[in-house]
Image 1 (tube, rainbow, N blue to C red):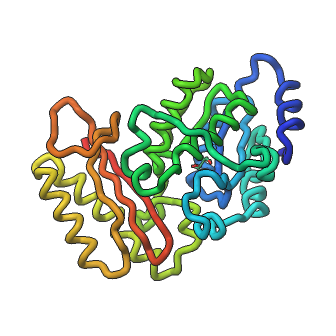
Image 2: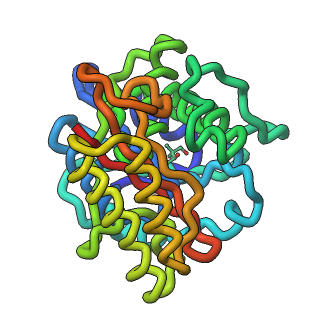
Length: 281
Ligand code: PAF
């Protein structure tokens, strides 16, 4: 496993690979967990070599405290990746390798996807995601890039990004991996106390209950049920719950037969923000 901290040496290494070698790419912000590792394993099984980037991207944080406290565990990340069988190249840059003096994001129009859910609650977040993913894809030039479905809105936005910027890469979404108690794996889970970790399972339980009742319960009633579940739990603060159309990510008020729906939750355990989602039909 080779580690590059500068894009020039990474690009040089990639340009010396065989022409028909397939390159897979897994962009991450580090603090790697089994969810990330499952993406890397999938990428390794489908490509000749896999680039994993580890970079906490400042422009996608709308809250400076959240950026400062985002877990950074590069040594552990590297040992996890070293244990994998296959050709892995790590890109671990400093901010100055990816941004010039003005660390700022480009403004994007993702056809409205950016205005829903996470976009409403984290202003500018998807401009930051679009900016960094575009930069990384242009450096790595992968055949395929892999993204987790935990950030389902991000996945849809990245698909839109590569289409508007005409980037020749296939975007693959990978299923959410969960802890034994159902909590979606996330780097932010590292910040939860044991008690919060246990209590956060309400997110998964509620999503599951919504999925079970979806076919015979009006959306309004499901919304009320979820609000009630969180009111009863003093430890988790619901930021939003939405049932949305999987394609447009627009809030669904009632069900239409031909559409696919997903339930989305964002909630705070103390100051730690957790998100999760689940397909409903
Ligand atoms: O999902 C993430 O970890 C980040 O949003 C990404 C895609 C690596 C961009 O910084």
